[in-house]
Image (cartoon, rainbow, N blue to C red):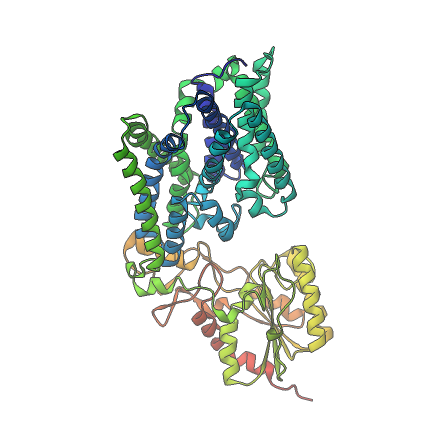
Length: 620
């Protein structure tokens, strides 16, 4: 490596590799499980290119903060404003009020480059609900721009190359160390600019060495590039969503990116693989492609009953490429490379401010709920207070103890044990309690079936052990078991162990089978139906709904185990389909399997006679 180079097409090729990894991770996570490492590659490229520009301008005495941020505005704002505005407009017709409110908050946060902080407190990048956040991917822009608030100022103030080198090493080492130390705090480690700064510093190392301490020429730059590309590709295929990331694992794609940049200028392999016309074009449109692909995938899925098929995901990717090229050619290039004027910069800044205000207005207006009929607005019901989430319906990731209010001391005493779907029975059980005085005990935990063995997590197994001890101590008259999950070979042993343990305690045991499982989620299904047909979903539907258990087999199994079995499916479903609404307007479920308050009351009302019979004193 000699003097700082001019335009290097292989770096655009490396951008193409990075953006392709991210796009195909989002579209085909089953095939590219670690494609999210493409963002790390982008950070290295950004650190290399932008640090190099800052070093040169400070050394020449031409650096100004105004000029630096003017370039950032011209580079980032045009495509970002277009994408966020388009997503807001499309979501007006697609998203229910609660989801639209969340989108408004995402737009507002992204407009001030704080999306990473917003998602830090809202959703993990690998959480199951990520498909409900159309602008989740903008977290990386937040990290990068937060870094560039401080880095140009630091370089300008330090003013000497040796001081820059010290700063690069100090910031990089501290950032990497913090990332490794925080690897068990996934969201903090993933979203924080502090734990990501070392990746940008990795690029800054290359930029500094080119200018002030050139490395000796490598005899075989092709080998260097090959190793670098192998590290990037291997990372995208071998690292997955279960890994603590970034931590030390991000060193693999970061090191790979550094090697490609270091050896790429003299490598024939880089020229062949990264500097060809198609790859360079993808690199040139990588920024708008990154912006477009995720909202296209998310909003496409939002208008369907089911997740996108492989073909549909492929079409979404093709559409993203087309939008990216059009944005690059018609919006980005004319503004970025056109005549510079303070008026144009003012318009861009004003456009970003207007976008932020639009997002804020969406939040303050509660998502403009009047966009949809009352039946659809009701379908967006939130988790009822009666579930007592965080107190009697535990999140085992952070909670292990039930609150005192979960235990009543009135006889007869009914105890509810199960997962969050059991917690959703509480509104109906409260109504039953008002009619027939009795005590209620709620010992429920999210994603934790009431099994004493079988395919459950360690936290769930520990929780169920505590519940067994609680029930043994309070000795309820009736235990109502309910959960969302399969009844197969792997779970039957667990159910048998649970029932055997309860028999030793002595209550009457009722197993309530799962409620209907709506594959896409009932509110989303109702919304999709309305968007595509401009009609309400029929009051009963047989499309995209499943019964998780075979009722006859379940009844036989639990009866043989000494428990009474009640089918929830038969309450909600008949030959015409399953109830989608109650009383012509109230939705039956708030998602795939959790009942609304009215749905819970309807279910408990329907089986009231069996519950009251179980609560009566036994014949002596």
